[in-house]
Length: 272
Image (cartoon, rainbow, N blue to C red; front, side, top):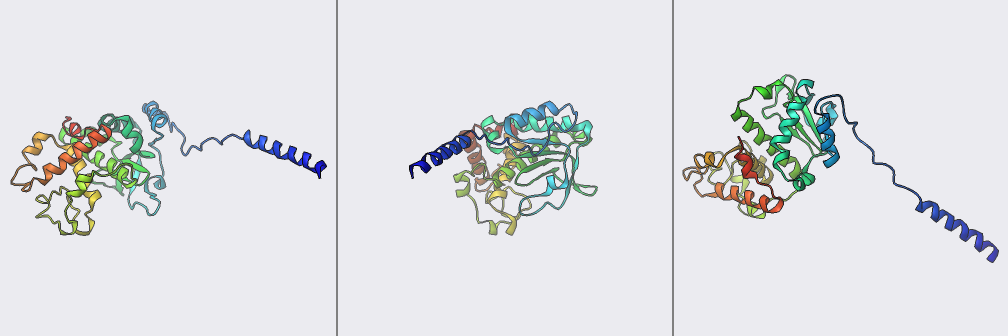
C-alpha cells in the first residue's frame, strides 16, 4: 500500500500547486469606450474609470428600455453628435459637481444615456428624463437645451436630480430619512385639495399611484429647483402650508442627507 500512497500524494500536491497558480479572468467590458471621437470622450473615460459608469451616446432600444422585469414603452434616440459635450457638461456641472464623491460612488447608475430626445415617435417627453434599475437617460443632447431660459434650465436641473434619486431609491442605494417617513400621511387619502396641508408636494400622483418613493422624489425636485426665498413666498406660506408640514419635511430631508453624505441639497436650489 505504501508504494501506491507516495505517487498519489505527489499527484495531489501537484494539482494543488496548479490550482493555486490560477488567476482570475479579466472583468468583461459591457461596452467599448470611447464610442467615437466626440470632444467629451475624455470626460466619459474619466467618469468610467472613477465610478464604473458607462456614458453612452450611441445605444440600442434595449439599452434604454430593458428593466429586468419589464420594459419602458417609449424610446430614446441617439445624441446629436454636435451636442454630446453640451449634454454631458450639463450633467456634470449641474448634478455630479454638486455631490460628494462618496455619495456618487454609492448612487451613480451603471449607464447614463445621452439622447437627442426621449419620447414616442416625434412626441417629446415632458421632462426629458427616464430611468430603469440600471440606467438614467438624459434626453437633451440636441440644440433645445441651449435655447432654454435660465428659469427653464433650473426646472430641467431639478427634474434631473429627481430622476437621479428615483433610480438610486429603486436600487436601495440609500435609505429614506426615518423622520420623513414618520411624518408621511395616509397616501390613500391624499387628493388635490388636501395635499399641501398634509405635507405632500407631489403633483399628479394621487390615490393608488402615490407612495413614499414618489412623495420623497417630489421633495428632491422641490429642494433642488427652488431658492429658499421662492419657497418663503410660495409653498411655505401659512395659507398654503397650513400645518407647517411642507417646511418640516423639507428640512428633515436637507438635514438628514447633509449629515449622512455631506450632500447639501438646499445649496443646489440656490444655484442660478
